[in-house]
Image 1 (cartoon, rainbow, N blue to C red):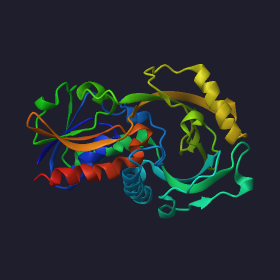
Image 2 (cartoon, one colour; image 1 turned 135 degrees about the horizontal axis):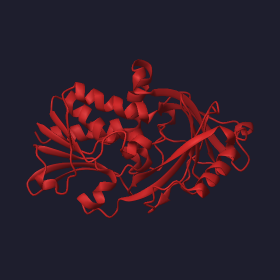
Image 3 (spheres, helix red, strand yellow; image 1 turned 30 degrees about the vertical axis):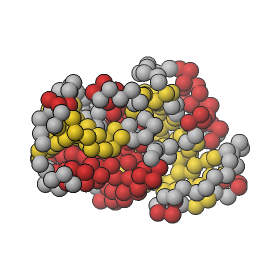
Image 4 (cartoon, helix red, strand yellow; image 1 turned 45 degrees about the vertical axis):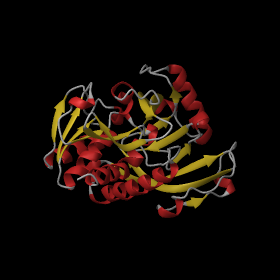
Length: 311
């Protein structure tokens, strides 16, 4: 089939590669390509947290974990490494269903938990350096025969191809009249200091993380729902640093070298479904919030399944 993927972020490129692997002809159409997509500024670590529907998100996440773990072992140029991290919680909760299915998962001892927290776990997960990963994805798709066209799509019914794969993220507000898609603004800092392990508080109201990469450690974060501003705010830097220092007291502010801002495409539930629009078959795949990378390959597998189910 001739498949047109709209959107060149991590979701769009992952779908393109899976479709190519299944023998389809693929063109990716987008108004922005790397390094100018939202995906390019993602933190990014594998972690299926606060993504709905939960049962599907857990499955998509585990499928993606396996693929990213393989990249870490076999494809160093992809920019994926396996790192240990610790999640801290302010109350005792059930262990995540995916915990027993990933590497090095264990419950933390009481002396490993910072003040203010009562529970937590350690896990080993892929850290994805998006400035490397995004160009690698595009190059891989190109080598497989994917074509690319820069254009802003205003009407799905006018897109060429036998089937359309809609991975436009926040653009779905306009393209699909989906007002449920809203930005969750994320601001981060970069520091030339390694915390040893990642530190995480993934609750939206106290969101905090340190993600050690090979070049820098990413410090975050914010999740300001409905905020469209891409301006880097000093007051958010102060908030981020105060939260991070509570988890990582050895942080050295003199080693901070910059930061970034991105708008996550948030939605109450990820939209991954088939729809017919004026006789055109469209597979929607958007609304991943901060879990776009974490769920990318699992979602791409479902996109291919939906398309091959209509052949």
